[in-house]
Length: 286
Length: 286
Image (cartoon, rainbow over all chains, first blue to last red; front, side, top):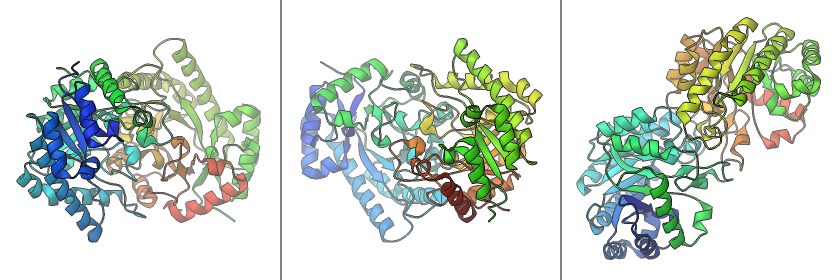
């Protein structure tokens, strides 16, 4: 059985599977690519992880995730930048270990407001400055920093970059080879500016990653894990995929679904369900 | 004891109090105005409600709420429009019964996607068309329809109008005397376009209501009731109030907090807490 040729299983969808298992279920489901996360990579160590990825024959579509750099100047910000530099090196190594077509893309989540801080504009400016501080490292490593706008429900505590337009305002201050954006349907589906901003991202060659997940209601008690597989919710995935296609994106498309129900299921079953849901509802061309 | 002269207690903050009690606790807290809801008004009937409001000596700052008109043409849409016409009449009557300075403002929440419908753009267009269908009724009654952009977390199931800019795009298709917008900090605080859009709303004379509530984390299991009194959360209320002030808004400012903790408390205590929180943290001039 072979899944859609551009499908990539983001490892968060099978969150509890160790790297070796995640690679195995991805391949067994006929999926050709995987989006990796730093934590399961760290569990086995980078060198071993690269060997496992190479053995798997899978493409690597991204590494999740860097960012969390809204702290004001000081030790916390310095530590965050150092951590991101390690993530950049990991991204380069893992993409090199992956099959041809792998993408050296590091997904960046800005982080929320520091404790007790109500200056959202200031936090956003610090996130931009942090990206600027990492551009030379990314360029040297051949890695694209992919700024992920997060749904506004997370603006306070997770990601202060809230719209695709805002992510592009940041990315466009730097070369497209070094800084792009993530289009994640879960985060941006509601945005009335989406068609215009996806087109803008395409014109500038800024779409570094396209992720699909559905918005389901009623919301789960923890909105962070209130996501569904393609077709399970309210998002016009076919329409959004057509926008992204028209904008020129031809890379792998990740299914990244934070869902307790999926996490509690057998990862092999989840991988197969993901492949089926993607083929049926994501609206991505072959 | 007298509260801030421009404070209005939105009745949702003391949701379980019948109208008579809500009026009483508002007055006892030294608050000069109240934002009413249709359900507690209906419990006593419009005529009696108007008499109670007149007796209270309070200003009426708005009536919540109309809207919920995203259904496609058919009986459901017709029923929704008829319901909104009744709400327009109620708004006019209650504002006339209130003390001088009362505002004949009907807050409109667009409603979510119809069941099984993924066409967000279409739902938004139908909401705009519904407002257009009500403009003559509002004008005849001297009522302002106030389009409330809702936080994008509610785009699927509650309100498809997601940003202040989008609400203004709708409102500006109609005369400012008939259609304005609501600026509710809980719904719009995250928006990078907020300063520009508040200024735009002010230039056009479109700010029909200003509501303050804070964004608290961690989010409650039901995000709908995950709000806090001014000062309890992450919103820069002083900065936002300064924007609204600079945009020329001089009307009453409602505190509308959906919070199970407040709903479970004594309404008189909640009114007093609201007055204190507003004075301390809302940043509204006298």
